[in-house]
Image (cartoon, rainbow, N blue to C red; front, side):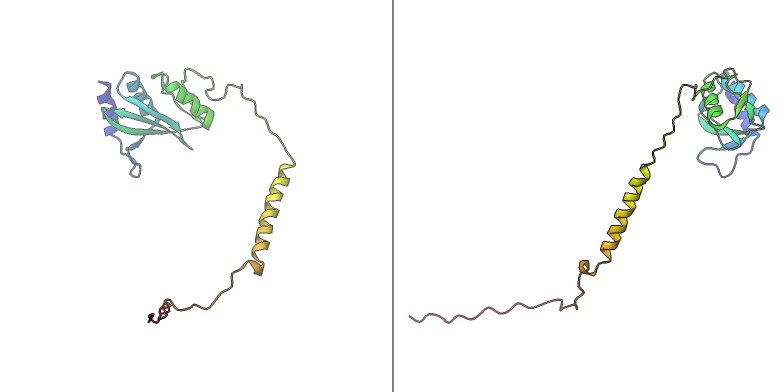
Length: 176
């Protein structure tokens, strides 16, 4: 069974201690390719595939337990998983477009995110600076208005907390 072979590869490795929630195993290119072959034969489920500053990571589920394996990128290249497991091809192409890491042995070398159809336009609008200048002037006017003494409330001495009510006036009864 391919799942037991992937589990056997991972049993010989030490996971990175600070990686959570799943264990992450750093591997070299040979073990990376061997695990890719086992995934291609149905030994695990590909859950994610992404690049980092100097590594490429593969999230997979083996026998119901998720884990992450990582391989270093040497000279901008790493072994391809897509040559063994076709659904990884689009993710490898996006890693190349975003990070510049090329998978050697990659069956499809077309770009995934940019096919050259997107035009990049840069507009320079010199009067936009006037809008920001107006915002600055309004903020300065607000600060100037706050400094005016007429808008400040006068401070009064604190009075008693309880003022008793006056007694009601006594009315003489009518004697008629």
